[in-house]
Image (cartoon, rainbow, N blue to C red; front, side, top):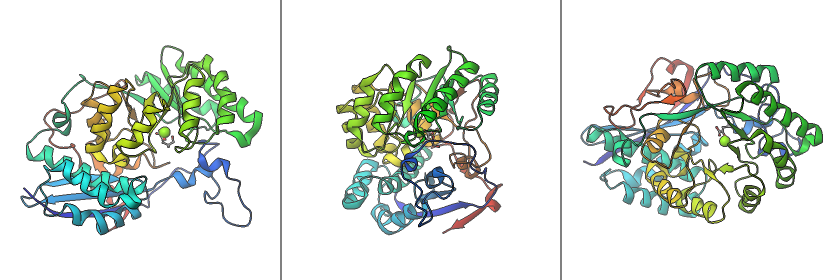
Length: 398
Ligand SMILES: O=C(O)C(=O)C[C@@H](O)CO
Ligand SMILES: [Mg+2]
């Protein structure tokens, strides 16, 4: 079997989107003041540069007609250009079963500029499509090629609770508590630039959610790189009483020493990894004890080939892996490793930040039942197909 072609298309959502609400989500751009001289990169809402209403879909076809589906959501147009220009020529004519060779070929050929960020995300999309082909070619789900079923079903956590009105957040938590979720991730809305009032607001929001879900359910806290070490040093001790399962991405991904200091500071585990890339990136995080939970995203980190290696590395360090965002490319890694205790889960919503877009492009994503997800032993490959019913709401760039 040989790879015959690689097709990368950018799906640009032109449908309805939910406008920014409240303080939504602290993030890295919060620490950059709005310069009146020019349009702030994030426009009105600082989360703007992190919203992604496009997705690049990759279809790798073999000479015997198998089509593998891959995807990338970071800088989709740039990722498409990288795939068209650099990656496709490296894999066309090759045997998809040589997936380690092909992953290394793409990683090394683009190493001068692509070892972090969108270069690795583009490689991820091609690699995911290759694994879809492998599963389809032997009529097995991808997780069966990675180690098989390690769980009867996958526990998942409800992930949203962006910082809007506290009563709204409590209603949202109540709704999903009633749907059987036993773990919840909420977002802070305030950071250093909001001074002590912001600290008070952050603590109030955690208290409000804890009031609804109680203390016999997991609560995770998301900062999305919106703090700095000084601010985190001040607020973390105040958060311990809420017993969070982890606090996520307090500072920018490059501040590994900052992560390590905060991870050792209190009883609250620090998590991260959705903005880290390659096996070596995670070795660095583990060697420096920067995180207590690893959260790579398989469509960013270097694909299934790379994520599978990182799963093994994290197991050796006894650091659990709970991949970012849910989505099928991550669920197969979680199902196939005992060191992956649960998955993140965004139910299908109106398009807001962009994580939801996956549901509007792909058919086959599992729907959580009572806080669990199931993968099908008899669905070959990733178990995804392209939807047609929302196609009208996308601009598609070939
Ligand atoms: O789901 C996450 O962990 C993310 O970082 C998504 C982003 O929307 C902010 O939470
Ligand atoms: Mg996150």
